[in-house]
Length: 437
Image (cartoon, rainbow, N blue to C red; front, side, top):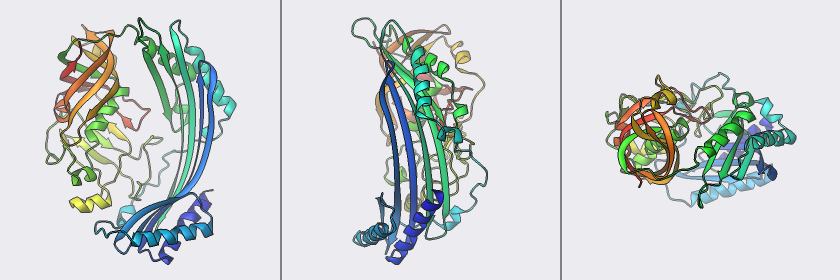
């Protein structure tokens, strides 16, 4: 299969040049996914899908466009490429659109990132159903309304080539399992909780008993939830929930956001404006990492990129196009594994020292303005008093500004959430404005 995809990507480049394109970058892909879902112990979904396709980026007489097709047969592909080149000629010129400098392709790691697990490829349907039933067996409660249990796995193979010398491929597997549970509470309340984990390799994922028990605990801890009082207080964010805050903070840290003047980081790159406790590195070379890669979508060789340190945003995510627009050298156009440098204490040790505050376990809606950094987020969690995690709270919000919020980051935990490409531990913030009762 790899050889065939490499052939198709190479064919697309050759056909594009023959049709008059100055340059081209093509990627041929094959992907397969299988999803199993049980609801209250009964099969709700059993689905398998397989797809093939090719994406080609064309540079024609100073013009640019991207096209996709699922028909990889030689003759239809040749006609598709010919028409695509003709359509691209009808577009407006864009002087900033050029194929990436081939020097950016150099230095690609030769190490094995272990992104493919043969054990995932060998999973059979009966095994998936068995895992789901084992998880479902742990999800029992006298207030149960529903328990949705799932298992999913995927496999993708991508081969890419360019007209200026790039050639590469990558193969990835993944497996996820978990459960979402809804219970019956007083009145019409329906507290819910979930727990899902996944990774590249099967052996790195918790067993079904642990997954089911944790999902059940997440649901039962929501029983009796009330609206906490409005106040300015300390906020402790569990690792599983902290990734969203990092995503909001770094979402506008890109050349595209700078070019469009939609980033609150504009004018602050290299300036110490947030807590020095936060250190973030974008590391695409973590073995078995969910965001690991050998090269990015443009073919730029993967390497570590310091993002936040010393209280400052140190680097942007810069692709070729927007890098030319804002006159910055390309780094990479997208994030890989964002790794937050851990501290010395875990969640339990941190909360034991909190006199008063809120523990955030999940977010409910909300919004953030990438231009100003102002945000408002709904949350679920627990009140903390005298070092003890107490009653569940809900229907509460926090409001503020992301720069100010992270300027008041008081501590970073030692317990990163590893089932994500954002490996963030417990985060502790001082003086957060909570809106509630």
